[in-house]
Figure 1 (spheres, rainbow over the protein chains, first blue to last red):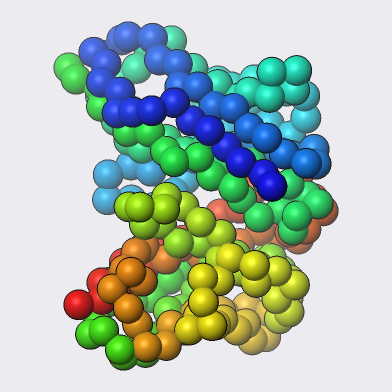
Figure 2 (spheres, one colour; figure 1 turned 45 degrees about the vertical axis):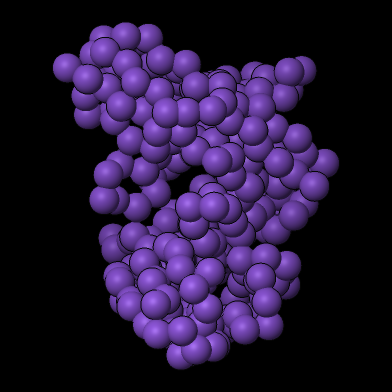
Length: 113
Length: 116
């Protein structure tokens, strides 16, 4: 079945540091890939997505590129801010499986001033 | 426009009681999904509705769990004879068409269920 693997957390960074959160996937079909973010006390929000190989999703300074050859969708940001502190979930949606989302375990990011 | 709404936002119940959780999807969205977020299991899919039909119930953990959707809109997730392991945040999401398309799902704020 489909699965998503995220790097273990938590991650603590200083403000303006570079961020990489690794995500790899296995899927039987040709999935879309997503990063969702959950800020403290809030619900899940879509951060960015990519629907086909080599697509780059971007939003709020975050980027991720759909790499079919390495089955990866790593999240990056060049300079994190305190306001980026949140839990980040990598997910895939397989159109052949009713497009339900399969999530990674999530990683908590804390950015200190 | 309005996003996905869920009620109640918090629910505390006693073991053995039944609970109903409600989801109002974004207007016009035909696809509706229920997920569960718990400490031990992360985020798990429960059930998928296309209109009022549920073609995928594969994530429901036991026959104590059921869900329905009426009028192609509101959905109710019912947990009978609640157990402590049912304690979790129950999330609802909707998308315009669902299966077969590469769409974004939009999530509600969730219902936090605590079974004592």
